[in-house]
Length: 358
Image 1 (cartoon, rainbow, N blue to C red):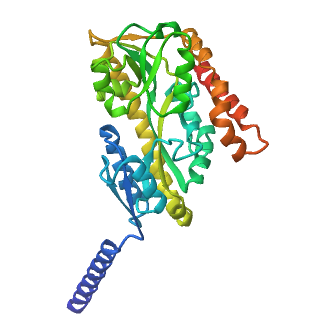
Image 2: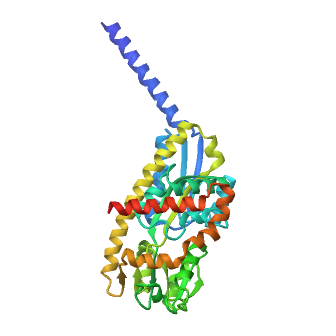
Image 3: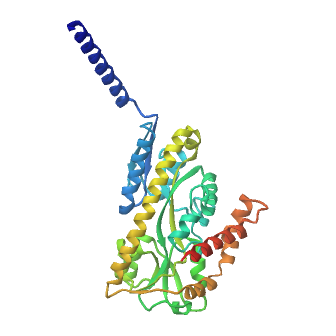
């Protein structure tokens, strides 16, 4: 009996010893892939979720991919991040697809394509959405693959002079614009004949420009009205919803294509989970910000009817904008497929389907 007990104890100790060796081996195993995820701007709300993505990739890949997160422009400017992902010194980043970097990028945020969260979810659905597919092709051209989307919501128009109910209310306003040419063209057309003028000012300088009267107004979003304090220097805001702000989280395409399928599945699982949480969080914040802004005595929100928005839409003359900005790239990328009209038709169907649910 003593011999048996001693033998059992010996076996037990051996099992424990082997278990310790195994756990040490697992813990000390180096990851097969070490990636950097850099974000070029301060994004307080979204930082939590991008960091979550990094952690989930490590979890779902069983430690085979290690992703370190570098927020708030630690690794450089937007354009520096872009070129770093191309050369693979940064593997993952989030971009606004400006056409000087991504020739097909204008399709990400053409005016009057997406007006609300429900439409955005359909149009940008991973692997299926009409805008996801075309933007994936646009990013592939420059050596990148899309992982997930981050949205801030719809653009409205704000100013310090008067409520904007019709295009005629843009009379003699000085409006700030950016290098987003599709939006510039739309606003130009909305204000045609009113004496409205446009001035290009960097996004980070608009608070000072508005407070000093350099410009009277601009396009903005509910989060920016609060987080970037635009609501302090804009007295009036119309929820025009004439464009949707979406940025794209991407990975270097060469390393993505070489990744084993099981690790692609792990990254995609993490991406879809984080994207869903981001949508939920941003929508909740939007509702919170609307309440906060509505309570401000110095700030007036104009809730436009669908009929009022349609007047702005018609005056924007979006078919001409599509022909000027999108058609050349689409015809080259999808020859003989009449993609300019097809995309517009598909986006119109999404708008009608979503509107029909309400």
